[in-house]
Image (cartoon, rainbow, N blue to C red; front, side, top):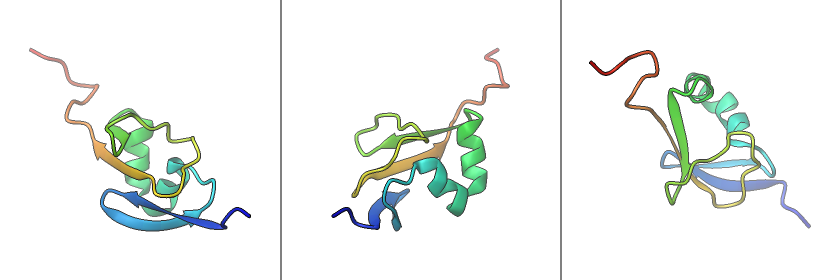
Length: 79
């Protein structure tokens, strides 16, 4: 039997989400501004090992995720 909800850790906070939900869906409910930055390429999402996470992929129980604003902005150039 598959549980209806699973725990994940997002930016140091424990959340309980519906099983099979994606990071994008979690951010759509919890931080739409960060989701917009992620989708625009101005933020990065990684797992606990530092590996990039696809925001559309379903999350698994116990996932450890960090979503952070990128230090470099695509609209700036190096002089």
